[in-house]
Image (cartoon, rainbow, N blue to C red):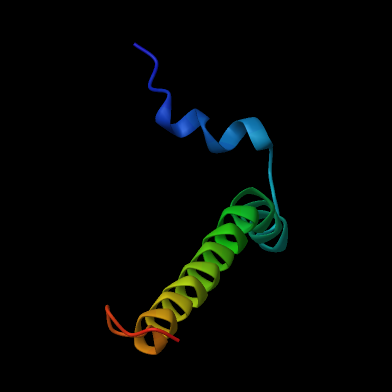
Length: 63
């Protein structure tokens, strides 16, 4: 029986350390950027909602 686990890195060939890091950045970098953007936008939206609730007039008051 052939074990596939040792073959996984072999399909890329022999990579230098910087090439391995570059490959990881290219593979996972966009997902990290997306997560940061979602976090920032979500935090901004929550702050806007909190500000809207704080500045909202109590029911029954006319402006």
